[in-house]
Length: 100
Length: 195
Image 1: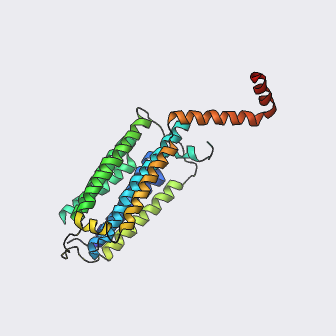
Image 2: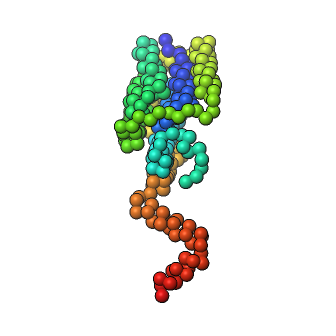
Image 3: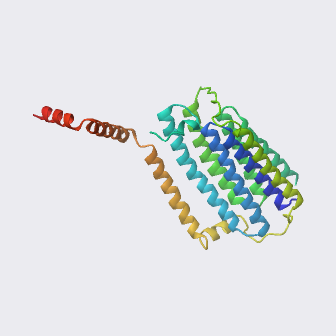
């Protein structure tokens, strides 16, 4: 027997681990991957609720999440690469001063 | 039941691996494992199209992009992380996140909700069902996704311009800085060189 909220709890656990990753690590690439995991957890919760209520709109929202994550990764990696070309270090504290 | 528990354990251990891996390449590979086990979970939750989209878009496109950038920026480097500017921030953040996760688990055990065994309507979660929604009542989302993807591609081009344009911009900036620093002398110099 699988209950809906167990799947939602799994999504919550993955979300919390992703949040720990974003707050603990200083490498922007790893922080970015942790935030991807947080997106995925949200999509998993949407799909579990879509299964419970027999409503496909939750799956449409998960589709929206996947597309948003794709475009976000494009822009975020472009920002990381351009910051690296200026600073030559991978550390988020390098970006703390907003000077070119 | 057993399959879902195994997939959940796989997904959680892979996500712990993403956070704790020392090298970005390792955490990218752990993220692939996390994504694939989540795709199988989607399949068990009767979301066939989304499982396929997850594998194609995440494990195919996004992770290849990540691996390209990781190998471009961190190849053969061992960087130590700097000391923290904000002391105690990591401990507080860890405690708060563990509390959030624990509250989710406790609530799920206390209120399990209905079981996932009820019969489903036909075309639930397959290409026909999601296509009927996306080209019918939810067409606005499809248009929004299209606009978002195109503007993201344009944004990447603006952020990382081609080398020729970057050089032109740098030259223009230098000229502006020179003329601002000493407008009269540069004008004289230019006139001198002109005549």
